[in-house]
Length: 355
Image (cartoon, one colour):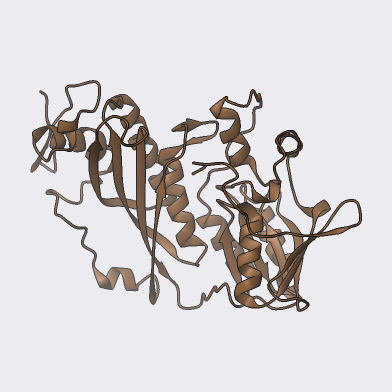
């Protein structure tokens, strides 16, 4: 077994087997070798010569970023692990970074806990870890702690990941879901439903053929640009499971407003619309992993749209609707046929294991 020394103090082991065994979760040398070879080699930034049971932060350095901590956690069980445009590793990092960013926080640190099915290829696990490390670097965050569990074959499906994120909110930012007022505009940053459609195609069980890719992306810089241009922004939410329909209903209920959206203004790829028509799905409920819904005061709508469209992840930004005061808590859509229909919360599971 070969070893490598980091910071001349910690010696890293190497995995000698091609597949994960129960011993790799047993707490002994096999587990140390797996963690060292797959995760530490990718995640370590050289700042910690030894591993502690927890990550430690200097409070003064955190306080330089703002006056409030933001803390979020998510689990990822997407199937398949690799799909057009992304994979479970990038999804886990970008998803948690985005959950921090939509609250106005500057993302700083992540944890990574994995549950691995016995028999999973070590090379597959390494690909996921590499993808996570690349995504974290692209977002300027560090993966600082984690956990590894291995369960017997059939007890889980390949790989589940849980990421937790810590960020700091600057003092001038106060985004709240209960702050939306009548007259506010509802914006999105681009084409909707691509992630859900990409997963459907990747599974191959619906005989669908398309080049649609997941929109999975880290949105922290886009949001920073938006807030600089439209500091009065009320609320931002990422439209993941349940799509924009779920987010809009949460906004309407929390703020006590009605929301009306325009079907003609809602940006959808023609292929996504076609998939939904074939399968009887409503695109408003399709999951996204790189799209946000933004509530902005009337006076700042144009500034917000300009800032979004100036960023590569917001070129398709659109005003899709407005908040009102009639029938608080209700979301309706003006259809392309001239009618109006109620947009409820998603009932049941439209597409399982989407993220």
